[in-house]
Length: 524
Image (cartoon, rainbow, N blue to C red; front, side):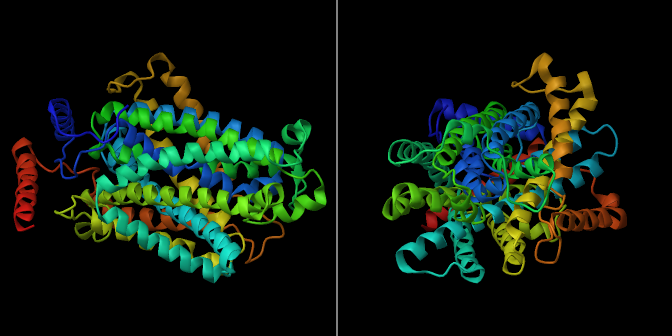
């Protein structure tokens, strides 16, 4: 795999082939195509970010099953997610476009392609906004812990929201500068994550005076909830792993900016999951072996967002914990940046096809940077609004992560379902599952159906306004809004992705961008 491709005969030939494929799908090359295969993988790997999801929801896994859920839940969910990703990758190779999931649904549906595309797109949009909110709020929480340790910064919800707003603005600005900056930082992020996991794992393996026993790590089940059904608690605890394994559809959304996208995008999807599975397992084992086996010492850790930080302090001391905390929140910052990138590309593509209110405004491309600047800032604002309930609801962060997981996985599985219904009529790309396609596809579909119901169930007992899991409300609002709009109006005019014209019209759109870029260079 390579990074950002430079000029040269090979790079130019790849761009021409990719542009021809994009024209065959009905779109002009409006976004700048500079990303290589490694950069495409890096965006998805960065959004999965084991140093974000595993750490920010570690407290949740601790309460809902303890070590058994953390370790074996990660393995179960990781293997299931790999199967889901394999089914998606096969379709990504056939349709390498920024629209990704909703475009796939339109092309694969035998009947009512507009309806399938519409609802896939809206669930994808919900999940993208929620994943950005979950990642950046997680960063804000960990950064607040760091500031509290070094400068006594308050860690109440209001002060965390101030940091949250700040990081969203920074990520909006970074994405506004263009795909080159984001690609470079995403490449850096891969090594930051891998080296960061190694540093944390080695530190916790060799420096603490005490380690938990193997029987504690691999067999200890702990229920710090008011639920009495152990199986139910264990299943709820899978949220930590399943939430972490989200966002790898970014490789598809970056297709129009990636060289050899029909191979790079599916490889990016699968490799980002597999590498994250291994890295996350190492990280979880390191953290779990550093846990105290004394239940009285365990309880306060299990009930705190700062669970990993408390483990580091107890095992390594305050100053070393501050060092590891820097590694963690920087990884989370990289993760949020990549999430805004993928989120904005989805909004851009969905708006290009007229499916978002105010679509003409959100589809606009900044001619200087060739990025969808307006879509970037819509992603930022929506993510901020979705996380606001944390000010009043103690389970709001878990709800946001549930919303992200449910929204994205419903969008992930609908094209896979449609592909299975096509059977042998499916015209695949260069990346194919071959004879394994049916069994992989159906296992993925069954898994997503299971978790979509699971993560809308009550997480805390008793249920009241402060503990209510509002994930079903968010999903219901999207269903009512998109479904109502579809029934009232959209079914009349939304027939799926809109082609931008024939070959000459697409070339004219591209020539217009080339002329604008030339004029801007002359002015500069």
